[in-house]
Length: 248
Image 1: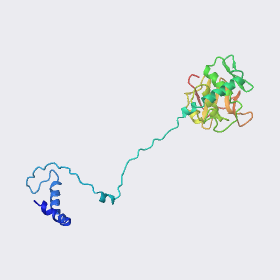
Image 2: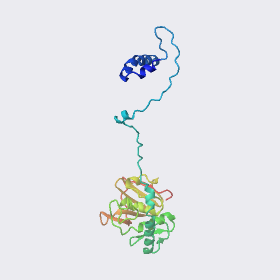
Image 3: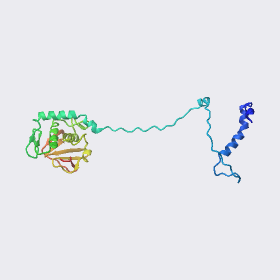
Image 4: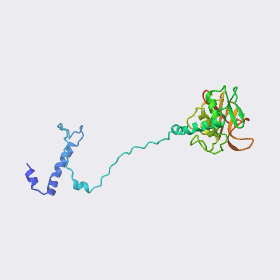
């Protein structure tokens, strides 16, 4: 009934006239379900119906819109160390072939103990093939200088440190896929001395004893770190952890 009158009235007057109606409407429809007005029974309300509200582009353009979103956390990527280690297998195999050519096609000696002759280790015939391969691999390093950190970014390097030397021999035996540091070698393989191959490791230094020969970068006769060499003399193993590759 009021629709014709509302249409002919200014917007400000309509707002003032309908304000009490809106307030009364909200007071009725926004009450709690269990609310009772002065003891009078409350009629059951009809479910509210959602009505579409027209979008005012002019009003929206005057206001800034802030959008909140959750950015997924980027996962940290770890370098595939073992996969990278296999990338230089061709260089490693080439080095072993060159060593075999220089050293008389993989020298061996009868019995179960290695023989050292002119800095070259002869693998015992009774040793497992993996042990022989480790000896022949280490022969390839006998002229390399000592370089701190050498042999860790790649098995093929210009120089080697103590753990890089032992890692090279282990790689020749097929016992590891990536170079290991000294503290990692304290937890490598199995506990105790092996029958053919024993690693002595502690924080800061490591060496190996393979079928009676010491593979070490420390030369007590010449003094200091001279590089990867075979030695007949032994060294004090107090403070070292003895480990060995499985089956060796």
